[in-house]
Length: 377
Image: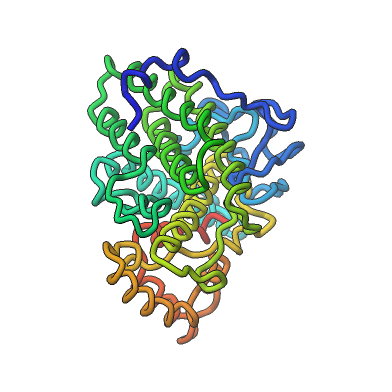
């Protein structure tokens, strides 16, 4: 675990990472899955709490590359927690339909933000980790070793979560020096990391991003911008190490790429769940800024997460039992987010209803949030 005193030194201990990759400037657009989207006109101006409006209540026709440009020209994290003004009475007809659609999307975005805000508190104990960080994540990089100690990035994140949940106005500057020192350390060391460690570093930085959203103020706006850029760099590097051509971080479904061991599955499932988190945050930002979430339909290939019982399995033997049980259902069930959205939008049939019943019976909190995505697309 990184030394808190060293991390608190901030800029002098871990200097700013050189973000200038491939000639890109800090304000270049990049999509939620870490792919550059230069020239997008979807968000033509800087967004902040003061200037994000609701001039139109229908969905934007702007073309966006993959999911959405959730950081364009220095997007302020204010937009994530901003409560949008109530929509005016739409009257009747087509306007009423758009009003209902927009209202549902706003409600879904607010529910997602409420859920994400619990992440720092969930990081206080291994038993309550957020749904994208596995309690046995140390097994990914040390298969068969029987290791029990959590990886450095995650254990440090737990320590920072302790400080975050006990923060006071007087300790906030110290807290943010620690956070900045840690994510800069991860960036500066990432080229010496395995794909497993880069994934863990990205998970930790997502927690720090949520902390920044919760504790957002004009004083730490710079932290939010640097964290977004740090996540972009980590995502690009992870995709280079791990490969994969799918949307998001390249994750694949368990049906198309079965895991051979529990350790392999923990890595693959953590990757899938991180892709889902990217998508959820991206959808929230798009709804808050009034643009279409995914006009290209790239979300459709995002693999759905595994069942709660499989994720919660605490031993190899327990995982093997649950894996066999879930594999039989997986073959006939929903595989990708596109499958889920299609079946939610389809007319009622006994077959569709049965598939949704099986999905809803097995999901954890992540699955419940993914059930909201169809209202935001």
